[in-house]
Amino acid sequence: MRKIKPESGALVVLLGALTMITALAIDMSLPALPTLARDFAATPDQVQLTLSLFVMGFALGQLVFGPVSDRFGRRPVLLIGLALYAAAALACAFSTSIGMLVAARVVQGFASCSGSVLGRAVVRDHFGGDRAAQMFSSLTAVFAAAPLLAPVIGGWFVVHLGWQAIFGFHAIWALALLATTWIGLGESLKLRDGQAIHLPRMLANARTFLSNPICAGNALVNGLCWAGIFAFLSGSPFIFIELYGISPDHFGYYFGLGALALIAGALTNKRLLRRHHYKRVLKLGFAVVLAGGLLVFVTCLTGLGGVLAIMLSFVVYIFGQALVMPNALAAAMEPVPRMAGMAAGLMGMIQMGCGGIAGYAVNALYDGTALPMGGVILAMAIGTPGIYWAVLRRRAA
View (cartoon, rainbow, N blue to C red):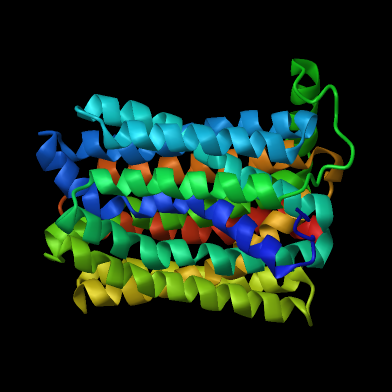
């Protein structure tokens, strides 16, 4: 069978769906967190470990999947990652204790990074510069279907089928992607690095990326911007469901507003990139992210407008995030085309590491109000442009 062509819309859909598996694993589980606490007689902190340690597993896995794909190619490593993800999802579904569920989620997080890391690497294998930024924007628009639909589907599963159905869906999704990848995705890596998984080469490649201000600075910009998103993911289920009394199967409707903003931001970013360099669009995104962070903090502090005001404020942040992250991704990977797998892995590790720290901060500071979540989001909104001006301003000039 003929493989998907790089310039085709089918590649965008497939890579977007592969990137989506992490978002599905996170967002579908959000409405289930209070239910998991009751079913396993666990504290909110214990249940939040299913989210935080998933992210840590995700961060660790990227240091494995990225370099291994530089050595053996994107396609075979992706197939292995999807198979492992499906197995871990089934283990989650059949968990009999909170400890077992947390352990299975760590493995699921580790395997889920295969989709996002190798999806980014495939884009860099085929494209560079503004074209890569446009491609990342297209992936974001496809990816946004996950936060749009996942909480709604997850909430419906919790109410009507039980939380176990969420993880059963994860397994089915991964197996469907595995079959599609096997049939339709060709190998994008033209020249494999035979030394890519040797420790000296891995350390040298990591040092090359992290010592380059353009690579490391944009990776931090991307990570801090994402951390604001993850602070919301971590705090909103308890704030919306327990503090404001939103039903788990209605939680996703509020969350869907954010997904619509993500789609609108991604499409806006792609259009702006046709007329402006991505660095100019990036600066516009900083202003929108900062405005959104301030609005979220004010609504969380005052309580004016309730849950809808918090969500609409966060919509502004998400719109700005869609103007920042695709361009930061393209900028960070541009200088290192021969080690795209390692670069994608390091970027993902930094991104999810920042997200895990932000999520932990929200949970550690949680006092029964929305203020800790709002404060962490504001801190990330300030830090995102702060890193740019501190590290990248002279380079950009």
